[in-house]
Image 1 (cartoon, one colour):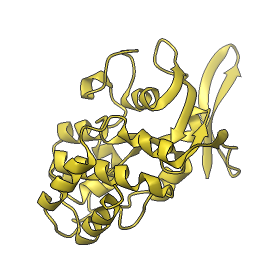
Image 2: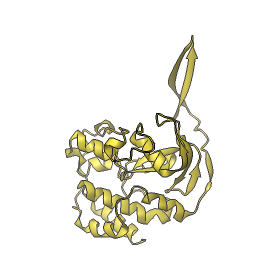
Image 3: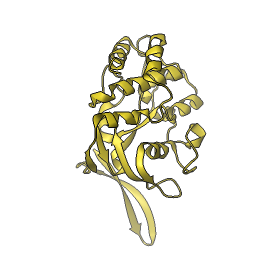
Length: 231
């Protein structure tokens, strides 16, 4: 089920409400783009290279996933003040991490003085399509919050979880439906439909795991090795 935000005017007052709708809104797709150009979006905010990832992957601890007991997305405070958690203050120091990612990953992006009402175009690295509505874009945690939780983040304190959930390395702008299909899966369970994105997707995944000391499962490591072979 989809939800949409509506404005309600009544007796001189103005409010927002959320209503459910069974028919998904029409995506504002404005065309396909080169699969390699789309994949290159994954370089934005990346702090290393495929060579770094190939060197880092063998050093990661391999063990089974931990328990999901106690997991809640709210354990990872997200969409917090962007500049506090590693994003540039420019062009707008009012941005939260979500809107900062939309600005970084978009083309010709404009925004209000409060870093809202973003307008521009966005290329999805996972499906190699372009969109002209920010509402069609999700901000994906490349290593999903739940996937981090079961590979080490269950033991973190709130500050480290907040850092993770708002880190420029962890966040990527993607097609909302593909982000939803990915859900909490690791690369042994879900890969981008755009096969040209395999190299940089796996690179980013490994760099995140290494930065935060998260472990990998044996099947996850096998999938990452295979994807890095495409680099």
